[in-house]
Image (cartoon, rainbow, N blue to C red):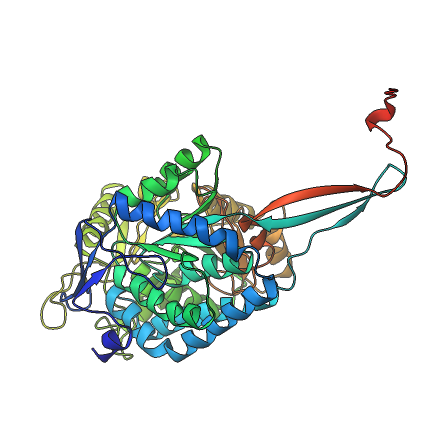
Length: 507
């Protein structure tokens, strides 16, 4: 476990930091156990109210200085963070894999996403532009500009323990904001590792203490952030239930929330699909990260003419899956995050059977050598109906539902009739079907793909979804605007003052 010492992870760790300074707190002790082997990796002392207040106050102070640093210079610091992440890519990728349970390849890929968002943010730092507009008043000019917002509170989920933080923080920093991050209490060591990495860069550049705050903790800490009027924007990633609570609390104080919540994603497989591509996209989409991606493929909506062919190919492919230690690159599927996730997986299987689902690939929990953690489960496939309650619900586990359709209109309707609206895909070589899927009358998701699975948008494209997914957008396009306040300016350079609506006001 050399990667732990490389990342300055100890057996006991402070969980509260303002950047270079680590604060003693009296919060609960959070033990991090690896789902890979069930072993304790380390423990973290969570934030208490006093240490939380210290972080927020330091962030407020830092913002007053940080916002005055020219945006391209802030971008240069983010560029250096990208270089530091390149240096620590291997150990951080291993930690992500070991603490969360995703494959090493996916762990390294997640760190690469962090590097990519740094590159994107560097370019963005020179493009934080508004508009110039013509005024109806002679001798007047109008324009709009974007200003730093203040403190950005980041609440991230366990399944992407480092990437989601970087999507938010790198953009927020080049925008002139400061950040306070609450990583998932299920993967706290990933948060501590990231804080150590950026600290090195911040020290070299004399970045004000408080630009990057870290507050490890459970639900209570997230509630403090949501209710705190000193935090104008809370970016929260997680379950729909969590998002509704955060959104309601933030809205009650008229703050802003950026929500990235559940996904119940589907692939439509047309009778005119390239089935080799379709099977590959569906396979990785369904079992990658053991089904614990918000973009995981939960439903396959298959044309009746190719239904049996697709079903048989999938059953054959599932037989070839290797389940085991995700740090061993020979394995395809690692563990679920913890035993609570295993229980939800088992409950969903039972509910599906109770509603009439037919499992063509059975699920179950694996035991024996290599599976001591009790978190390894079998990816499974069930034939189901679109109206099953369990099909409408997102289970964060590798359970795939097969649904049958006759017409493209029916397929799109099935795709859209779930409460979530994150990612979607159609596999077809028929241009009309593809274009219909992407039209106003097509997919209602924030991401809609053709001949690629239900992956998220690449860095540079805005990531996020509609309906119960929350409506937030991160990591690309004009998502940066969410981290800034917008201001419209009118300048009078004439010798008169024409009043609005032609009003005469003589004095």
